[in-house]
Length: 480
Image (cartoon, rainbow, N blue to C red; front, side, top):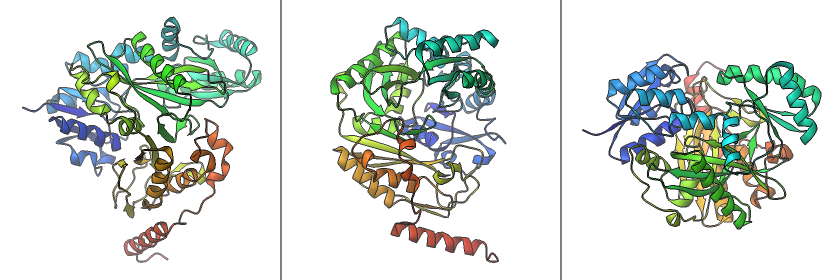
């Protein structure tokens, strides 16, 4: 019998995982909630199991996921990203039920998910870090600790949820008064989001570059890296555009960062795929941020420049196989850029466009182009999930070729019904600092003109809008 692997996720990442599972000769088992009953991920899987009405609560229900795996006869579960992917209790539940968890062990997730514990592990290993505190004590003592740290290192400081992730639970503090006000607010937010009100402080690195390193580690003692990614273009600590490799021209520095990432992974006894994240300041000093214990949204750019299937390797590692290549085999070829095409209105504070029907879907393609998505013409976007529709990744031999390919793809990509981030990315792709690779984490704030665009400026856009209007008038004959 073929091995069955359950995919404990939805959307584009569920499709990505299903493809890798089937290419390995295994069967993919999908799970879904009622709002996702029209989703593509349950149609391409070999089997699909309804978890419940949701929304979201059933995707997060460990007991129901385990029960679905047992019902289907799945021997392993891949969590993807988000939902239960970094939940140590889920990894432990899989272990307790004799199911292989495709990812790090529960202990690794627990240690690295707690940012203070992770910092302590890295400090012991001699990994460079931004100055920071331990968990702040409760009440007035914790506030006094925070004020003392700020007095020593100066403002701004970053107040972070100890168990936070994905850009959540982070607040920049500029003064003593703001510190006193925000600590209890941050604790309440952390408790609501992560069931843990612990917070700590880090000194802010002003306008850094955000560089991360993809790592793979098997159970046979092999730990290696797949090069760097640049995730500096972000909004409110949420990544918007991902690039590989980093645009920093100091190659010895990038090599040192990659070697440090491997050292950090070994210090944490890491297993499976992960990402070690760093900040680099204007003087090219680098600092450890965290290790993400899952496959990243932006793994596609690394796959494009290395030709290495990260998800396939995740599965093989989880089944006890050694990596089939060495560090010397990893060759970086060209550049890759990924943009997240979301059903959002960038002009309206990126307000989600859930509940709307995709009346026109004309995807792009061609040489060096990859699409990871699940949307189709006629699909109604659920209001209760993430707004990501499709990831567009382009690859080129040079940076200039890659940017031009991105421009061409964005101009030829038409989605109508909901507003999307496509025209926003068109502006970025034509913006001087982006084209020259001159950007850091302040890019969105310092380039407000990228929000000024005509959504239907291109001929493709005008045609798509016209087709969309025809569809709407047919479906709503009595509307004005």
